[in-house]
Image (tube, rainbow, N blue to C red; front, side, top):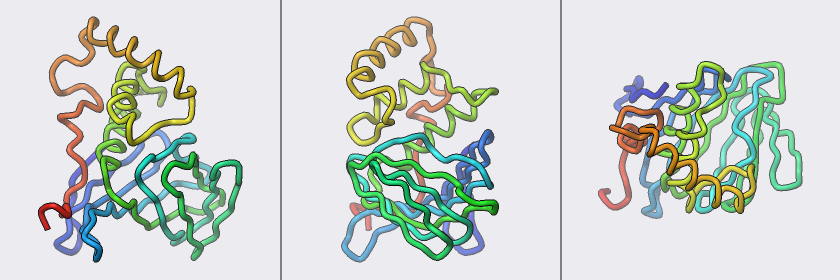
Length: 203
């Protein structure tokens, strides 16, 4: 589920929750001192839960601090354990995954630089995942999200060569079956407007 919420201050943020894993993200766009748009991200993940599968952001660098719990990280071929108070950095272009490696609630606070389309991408993925009763997303909606964001975001599996062949075919079948008719289907571009806040161009 996705909601635009007003916090205790005047700030407004996009709240995403994966109903299958309990992962929660709160995101907002801000303009940093260098004039670029940054996506601030606060998140949590229940004990024993896994975060996203191995994936890569081609343009964004993610950096953050573990506020509580223990963070497990797979960065390239390296596995790292980050305790509370520790920091983690996911460079742009490097495949990574993360999970709750402890027995307590994992709480994170960080940012993605630059913001790019990461908020809209995550909003669409959460919508597709939450639309499935079993947690196994519809291949039609998942393929649409991954294909339209393919220049900036990607999952590691299946391999990119297979994705480039399979996804257009899946989209073609989806259009024939009417899966993308209107704007109310899970993960549709019209329903994924991203996090609120200030963009550098308008600051």
